[in-house]
Length: 369
Image 1 (cartoon, rainbow, N blue to C red):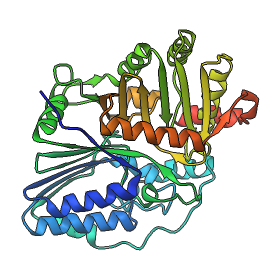
Image 2: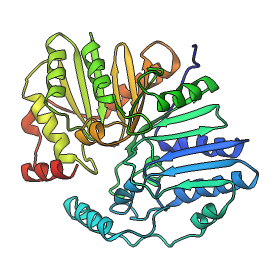
Image 3: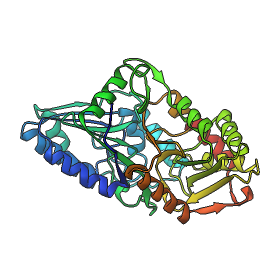
Image 4: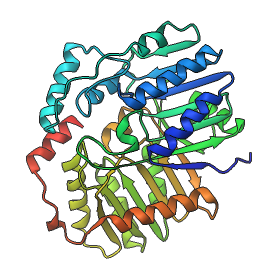
């Protein structure tokens, strides 16, 4: 099967513009699967557009994982669009995360009636009561366009977070009914369907394949390997495979956020351990941006999506990545060009003693994350 070239969206501003356009142009159906949906400007704006689409007869199905409410309500404006009221357990979890990460505790946004209008509309179906632990993000329009990647519905994805750090992330647009059909076939039976998509799924057929697919990408790299990762706390075999790749001559570059909102000390601890190898083929960089991306790029293959490299992503969360050849076509070229720009702007960590790690905090993060 021949697929069209994917369309790359760098950061949220451009993606949200295209998303709004797609919602306005939808004719029959919209499917949304989202982890974070905040009650903020962009969350409300997209909800209004979906309501308008439903008014003109478009069928809208929204799956919003309740598990995401913990993160929605412990940082930024601390307001969830679909889950304005927390259970006692959720309140305790939010309290712990706020204090662990010293997060601000602003008052929640004034509730709006948009959420209620969505729930009452006959053309809108909302599934938001289940703790699926589904970290994947995707949109499907009229069974012909699929968007996937790492961008949630929240203001900080298009500009800066509450700490003032610019967010950096990606989404991919896949245009053509053949993409949507391949995607749905993969979700029904991951073992038998197209390798174009990598998934961790708990149902209808349990499949946790992204760990091995990431490892295969690392093992198959021959010249170069770039890793951009928001939350990077791999198990020992991942570090071994990266070290092995360096020893066989692969130039490995790792880019982490200099100030991650979560998992920060574990990120630094991973970088510290890798730099302990003292391999000249390894270069570690810290970005001044909050790199929220989950990207691996060898000279052969690109993986881009929602899956971090940590135990939770590999063992308990539903995740979704695209696997695409690293060729000379516009999608791969645009991504490579942006990666080079991000590495140029980042701080090169030449010695692991430059990393200042709070070891007890790192231990606490390992328990939480």
